[in-house]
Image (cartoon, rainbow over all chains, first blue to last red; front, side, top):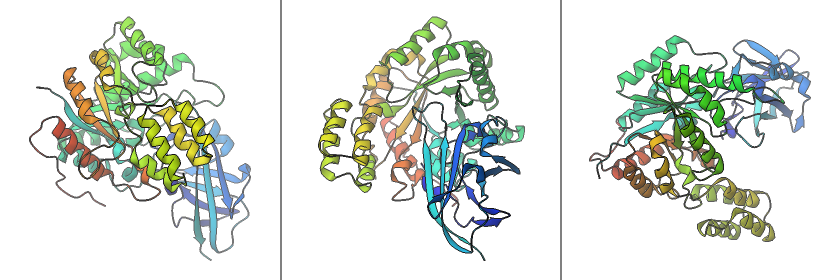
Length: 124
Length: 340
């Protein structure tokens, strides 16, 4: 649900060592960070390594491994988290950004992965 | 037949709008109140950012009570989760699960709720262990009976037996009307067609569901018709749904205290094409049910690939239908447009 709203339009930015965009969890509630199993980011269809990804909400930044044992923070319902990809940077112009989240939901008999891909422009 | 069934809304219904920040909590409560649906149900951690890991500030609780009072509404249920898979690779220990339920009992009490909703996968022992605390706080814990589970399923029977044995009246059920899915919903069919299911396969699945054919046979037949990917997904949905009988609620009526008025689509002439609300309301009246039926719109995820859901219009239509079935004189109507 709301998969097509995961990536926030117009949110691509250059950051030191890479780029960032705003991402939402496509779920009808939020989740504690320990239940976010993986976040995959791709550029032009090419996936970046897990170690290159950072997740930031309300001023706190986490690696994906740190999130796995974080029990005192959440990705709230509809909350725009900053997803940072340390890939060395992107060229100015339009890029196909892929964003996939795998999360653990106690009551589901499977582990969902939801994804969105959008063309986002990086200002020169 | 006289009855005292009341109308409400689970704010889950407006998720497509609240997710995007297009409706505030006040918009949700005002819209529901204007439709005469004055019972308000929430999923605590959808409506209140921070719950449970970071807690909720008293200021936010105060705002909730102010809005409930302003629109003359009644808090009905806080739907909680026990995230027993919080730790990777191991389930949350029993005592911690019970403590988690108690934490949600406290939150429900702060919000003025009469009920808190437990997910169906929680073990009865956890709820029984939390029941004395719920009694103390004036809260009832209701386990949601949701398809593919139903009132004759051994897991639900286990809960019913544990509840009776406990002797506590703080334990009960919250049936989700989606378990009475009499026909394959048109919005499901249309999405599967958009995903490329060949029309003759879609037609076969719809007919097989109407004929109540066992899901395993339907899945095999679809495979043999050459169905792949989306066709198999369309057939496999039969495993997660069922046309169970509304009258099976009657045996449990003394423990049923809230109802999820699940719907996938309300047509312009106020019909839910797949869930028999006329029969459901008849059974609830017969059983002397005196709680709320809370709208729970879940069609959004089936249409969002093709159109932007209009949750408010869908809820309005269901409330019109419910008011008719409940014999109310007035027709629920929106008074002011919702702020965009």
